[in-house]
Length: 366
Image (cartoon, rainbow, N blue to C red; front, side, top):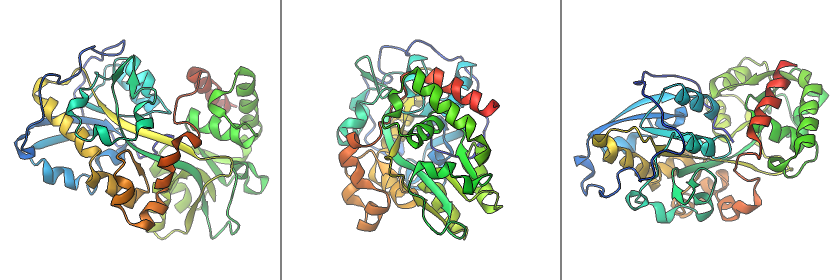
């Protein structure tokens, strides 16, 4: 699922995006990573969800790579990111999520193939994550999986004393006007499908999609609004406008840190897993390639992965994360789920993503 974050766009140079899956030659192929991290220089323009460059998160990167400059820009969804890139906006290292638009991004030329020999933690990545659409494409690898997490139900425990257990609870009339659903086509239709008893939402046919769309239209009045980013959802809870919403563990933790009694519950219909990672643009300048690989290697390193698990309850792509954290963090971040990725709702795009986007637009316009 989408990683929800506040939109805070920083300035980036506009370049022309490629198309058709990028170059066939892996970026930086034929070179090796410098032995001394402090010797690596360059500027990396990072386009990602906002957590991808959180200052506390990146502290260990700056300590290890003191001579690399990171210029940042954030987006609110992969759909937004791809639209910007297609219109000429690009960067050196770009964040994407498998269940949103990783495959589309690769096919659009957003990424160059990666030289996996330069990915220091590649052999430690969970094998199932390496096979996800967009991570791999036509025999090459374009995206390094970094993190994953579970979508679920966030609720104000001061107002809702019986914890929700099902996606159906979002549509319960007793929460009319007090609920919110993420403004993302894949997430919203997944939730609607699961709430109506569909067990394999990513493989629904056209008739089922129409049925789910109508269900969402019929229940539109239950929702105060559709939330677009983390900041908006936090505000909705803080102002008391909503009591329940679809959401993520990192947002729930942020609200708790601000003194709100907001809790997180998984739905009995199944865990919806998002999986996200980073790739390198084919337009990157040669002098910045070493710095880009350094950033990818840091994202999959244990210091970065432990931070994500401890502070955001994210699951890490590095298999070493399971034994690198405390038993409590292992539980809170649901790290044992990583041993059973095939049992979760697949972190992959739907069969007809464009149809889902159109259906969700019709729901919002109803």
